[in-house]
Image: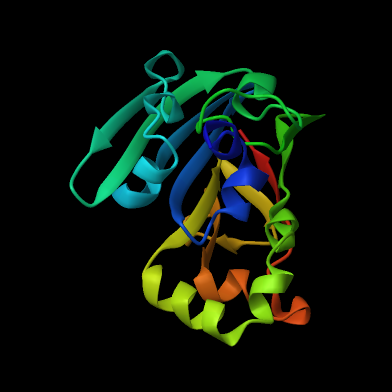
Length: 192
């Protein structure tokens, strides 16, 4: 299970049982910081083997276990490749699979492949009992991503009033919506 939680598409494939709140702040031409948390129900964590490596300390993670939840708070600063590794790379929940591309003149393109969350969800959408169970079991859980910089030029997400961040948030209904209603990829052009 640990390997499934390490990168963004995997987290999105499990988004119905994992709550995610993540912010990526672009600090420079090849430096960014990712902060936030991933949380799942304690029984899901225990069923997956209760592996504390889900939240490695050496990668900025702090694991907290309660009777009801397993939560990983993380804070990691590094190069674009370290913070947003390419597909199949990364070794902690703080490694957001996506892409930061320097465009020159202090401009960066941030891309998170949220459309990957659709993979494997089609079958669940065809089973009314499964849908009802998911809605009940994971009510109130969400997946939220924010891109931050000095100025947001454009975004497929919601741009903050001060123009320094863009966010997107999804609930369980967004994950199991019909194809035409599902959220697409999250792309932001920003200045640092």
